[in-house]
Image (cartoon, rainbow, N blue to C red; front, top):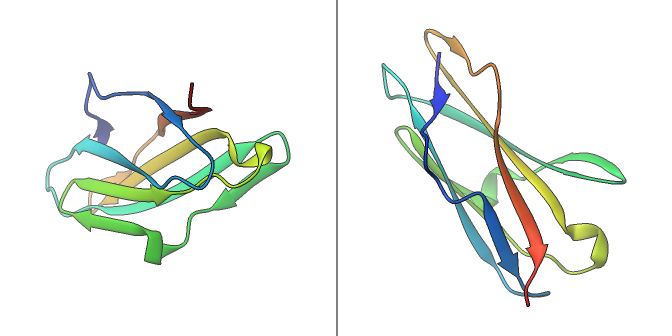
Length: 98
């Protein structure tokens, strides 16, 4: 099953109304991966819509734009290939810029 590729940037400073592009890179064999992205904050977990996600093989980029305080938190990325589903998500921290 897919695993997060080590050494990726984890912490992103993003201004309100600025769109960040967060890259999630997996180590997967076979490299044909389906991705799920979720956002987690104090209010709960929500799915990132597919139209904000661009996926190519084992790389997926989510476009994410914080608008309010509640839009800061953690982005989670999972992959699935024909072997199975990634056990632990890749975790990215979205913090206010500055």
